[in-house]
Amino acid sequence: MAYPLVKFESDSGKVKPSVMVISDSYYWGIFDLGMSNVFSNNQFWFYNKKIYPESFKSDLLASDVNLHQAIADHDVIILMATEATLPSLGWGFIERAYDMFTNPDYKEIDRDEFQEKVRRLRNKIKSSEEWMKSIEIKANKKNISVDSMITLDAIWVIKNEKDK
Image (cartoon, rainbow, N blue to C red):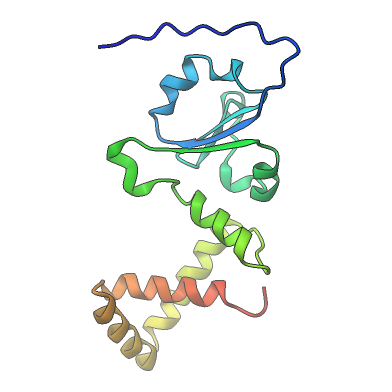
């Protein structure tokens, strides 16, 4: 195994960029090597859930942060995943950022509130015979379960409500 010897040169007078890293546990090794010495502001969004180093003192959740401001506050954004977690790359960050930058009506929504809306709408869909027929057709076309299609439909309806 290769074990790198990492050194940081004196950087007085140099401008250091700020970084936001959205990653799995692999980044802990890099973080522990002293990445905070390389950047002026080093934020590690662990699985896009907790933000470090702030969460060492008191939990800071990614869902509680204004995403637009967080992105604007950083010069570099790194998305990193090991091979095992690659299918989950971003852990919702990419979708949230994409929605924020492409949807002119975008507004941050409380995650618990959103999940409650989805739950209520799923129940409404299940109680509608006509809606369920439509769901079954869509599920067959997409080759997914009816339950997954109910959730996707509920999310689509919530995101496309006119009364945002």
